[in-house]
Length: 206
Ligand SMILES: N[C@@H](CCC(=O)N[C@@H](CS(=O)(=O)O)C(=O)NCC(=O)O)C(=O)O
Image (cartoon, rainbow, N blue to C red; front, top):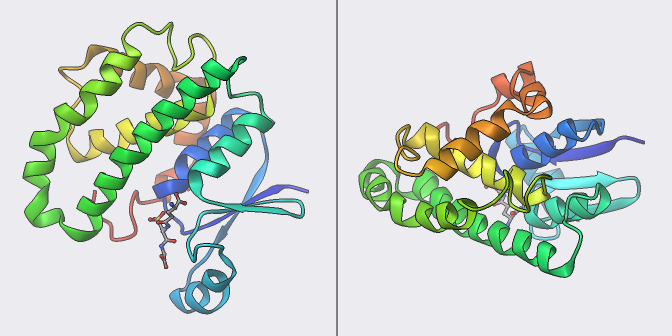
């Protein structure tokens, strides 16, 4: 049976998961948790933490977007080939989660008043990723993509929407973003109507 992603009709925290699955050639179905009444009364109570995305893989169910990415990383051999490689992918994915969390607070709680300061402080948040990516042979672990690359790419991509010049002083990140964007599987996702129809965030702010 096909994998199922249960989430809002949004890029949000599911986009890295979708892009991974499309590029790996894994068929999946998308279940929209809305309308709001359905989310609140049917889906939300089923979710371990009251939140989505949820991945359904046969009779296995998993929430937490980063746990889902890591599960798919293990399932499709996108987690390196040593414990040190896996740990580097984990480290960078945790860094992505830190910045994604700050981005989420801006978008949902403080966009109008906080955007200028957020964008001003953004170089200090991106510089660690530039330093971590400047000596790699393409991706987080070298020549092969990992689950964390899909998350880092999505993080950079949503920040390019928020602040289009934010990578101009970070050549490694700028070339990394376009390298991932040009991958055939990523292009397949990006060119899909489903992707084009989805907003980044629930409140439409970006
Ligand atoms: N740590 C969780 C956070 C999930 C989360 O915040 N989900 C939000 C939607 S979104 O922020 O990912 O867009 C949600 O379910 N919100 C609805 C609710 O909390 O009722 C994860 O990574 O999956």
